[in-house]
Length: 418
Image (cartoon, rainbow, N blue to C red; front, side):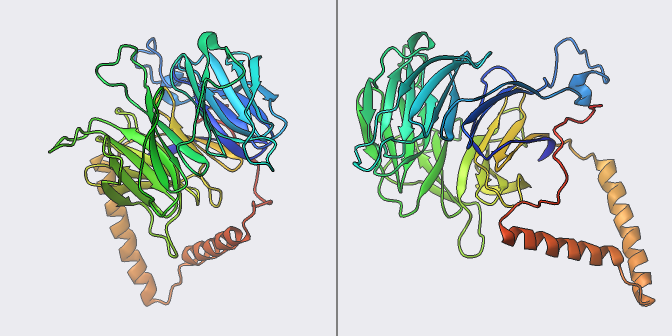
């Protein structure tokens, strides 16, 4: 479904990524406390006129680091863009929330995150940030606090939150805004779904926590909203998908938050499925059609589940042993996955035409005939033996839980680069 275009190495482990809403720009939050903004080459240009030699067609271009700075003394836990992309917010384990200009990285304002109520905690580490509207920024923390900040004029009007809610008993692992109702005059979301511990909750901007689900007896880690589904009975065609720690994706009907509606088993690994750590909905113009969700797993794989048929339809590998911690699509429709010390950029694979399939089938049949003749003479397939040895070496590296120190350097380049 996707082919990797570029592998971009990082100086330390990735904690968070934010994708610009209108430009091919990506910002990364690292475990070292650094915040780094990179610019990806555009995919197409209206002036290309279908020229096969243009960068839009041959994939040439450069990845540029727009700026990089040691933004936080501890690790940078989370980053997010404002709705217009002009400002970038970051929060770290140093207990600071900072607003910076996206273009330059220059800090425009900063405030201290309120401390946890726990007597042993000096700071309440952030878990995620989300810009709900041009006026409101949401900041979730490890203590389950959900702070609302006024960010009018892309700045903090007060040093303290305007509201604080506690929708869960554990840290908030994901936050997904719900689209505004038809009666909304602002056009911006005022309600959101969050996951924390083993529960799902719905919170309103002004009324606070509206509902909390029953205990799901499994840690809930990720969520994404999907609209435009088929309607039947009381269903409005809107669902929130939630990924848990055992490889199961649950579907929740909007407005029916007591318990899950459907389940999709994404991973059936022995001893329990891998955790579903992050999710992103494929854009309408990307993929096989219909509603497809990309799911980042704790073992480095990315799986794709199609709704309607409710099953996994494809799988790719981001990393051999590091989990996927971030996943999303840029303005050009490219998928960006992150985990460990690497970012990967993917584009949709070219469809295989019927003539290529027929030719490949013919070659396979010819090779099968040759193999049968060779077996009669006691011939041994040396390539197969070498492939088996490679698999054994790969398994040993996985069990070691470490990086392959003998590996060559990463190359951060798109095809067509000199």
